[in-house]
Length: 332
Picture (cartoon, helix red, strand yellow):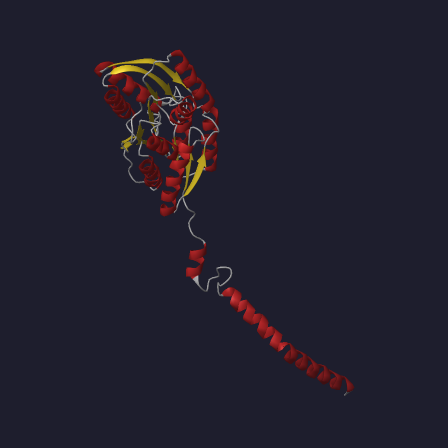
């Protein structure tokens, strides 16, 4: 009898303990139900929530410049606005100064990172062909902008017809000098397709249509310091020159410094328009500039990369045109 009595007492104590623990058990079950609802970890109770949290990553495009320069900062500013509208990410790279090896390394890095598409302004149109082709062969579409690499497998070129732009600058110079005079010129990178085409257009027009003599042409290879030294040396060697022509984004701004320092009243014409060039046009330090329609080119770069990344057809040549900009006054 004692054994049975002890057993019944233990049973009653067990029920009392279970009853006391019941609220805690119910609380744990309620918390588990909340976790299973998908509110925190995307559980199966709300499949729509899971799809919202695990969204497809945005496309990533690489943008490689010849060098760091305010001209390219202006292009980046507009390209980023277009990229934001399109919901894509831009990875922007540029050597401190024009440098072929650095551009190649930047391309190689983007290939390893498996970006979705690349736009490059090549400093050497021939030497960059192998790495452009490598990117395309790895499934990454590549387009060139401003300067082309036509011997590569790039899918498109976005930018101005540079030879026609050079011809147009020759026509402007012809009008200013009335068909006669002496000119000095500074170009950018000697292996850059855009520079060669601009120079070819300028010289062919002047030689065929005017009596204007081009006294000397120097290449700064993307260096501000070299451009400055070149211009000062040409002015010393040809003090009676009538006009200066800058054929790249470096030469025009450098001429502004020299004109200020030496108080020159000569014609100065250039390519590419930044805020500095606009100000120089307004105050007469730059006579005329040919804009490469930089803002439109920026938008088209992103648009064409997006087309290529999403499998849409891209025109092999996307000509963004050019715009002539004149200063308000003429030099004395």
